[in-house]
Length: 194
Ligand code: GDP
Image 1: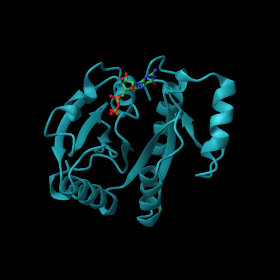
Image 2 (image 1 turned 135 degrees about the vertical axis):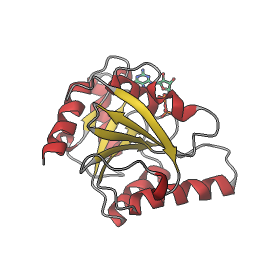
Image 3 (image 1 turned 45 degrees about the vertical axis):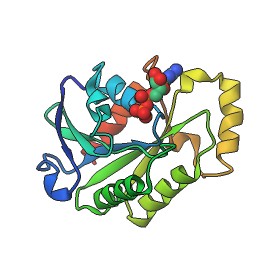
């Protein structure tokens, strides 16, 4: 899929506020703050400021819906792992996230992990939630341009101490060079055809 057209649709908190489904599958993106989620969405959609909407104050805790090629939605889920947020904000984030995971939307969630970091407790919790709600997901390692192949190999070994995966089951992405964009776009195509 070449994403030729993409637009912000709306922000939402409750399922009733999500836009009408237009396809039998939508694609959601989640990860800790700073993992490169906005950069990846911008790279994927070929838009420089697409996902900036979700960074405007007041919107960081919301679910942001984008429509691509008039075909399906990209769903930018609120990031986690902000250092100093009040408990109430964390609670609200959890509620918003759980409502989405438990919603009737047919979804595929991309979990973004910074290749340079060993997954945090929050990353692991996110994966557990997805399992718990039986939501299909795919891991994307971000910022792969920041490491040599050798470093990557070593780092993946460390990451595997926390989570199990085969290299062929995960995606690698650089929003800087757009490496991985075609693979991801192809993956979206295949998922839509299934
Ligand atoms: P978000 O908080 O998850 O939306 O993260 P951003 O997309 O805002 O990225 C956080 C920081 O990482 C920014 O300074 C980006 O420029 C940088 N960044 C994001 N993706 C990449 C990447 O693929 N390669 C490199 N080198 N930097 C990246």
